Structure formats: structure tokens, C-alpha cells
Length: 86
Image (cartoon, rainbow, N blue to C red):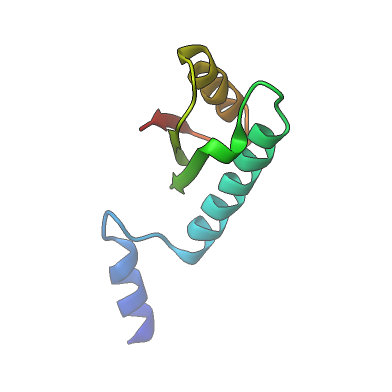
């Protein structure tokens, strides 16, 4: 019965299997590290959320060029399927 319940939860659009949630957390950590390692991105000003490999950046930056740089850095991170800028 427990297996059927867990399988039912995984089919919901907003639910993630544990392995996917762990990988999303790892992707977020890699993105944050990549942003922090880039001298042109103010990493403290960027919030990173990942859901099923889709990364959403919420940022407070001073120019469109810096926004584009953050997006470019994020796209190169292993595991990132798509990047959205909020």
C-alpha cells in the first residue's frame, strides 16, 4: 500500500521523486557556485530555484548585461535543462 501511495504522489505535476529532488538541489548548488565564481555576477543578489532541471533565477542586478551574464553562466552548468529569469 505504501508503494502505491508513493507512486500516486509522483504522478502529480508538482511532485518530485526523492531522486529528482536531490538532483534539483545539487543543480541549484552547482549554479550558485558557478555564479559565485564569476567576477561579473553579483551572486549574493541572485536567488536560484530548480524544479526538474529547470532553473529559475530571481535577481537584483544593475544592468541587462549582468542579467545576460548570469543566464549564460547558468546555462553551462551540468544538469540544467532550461533557465528562466523571473
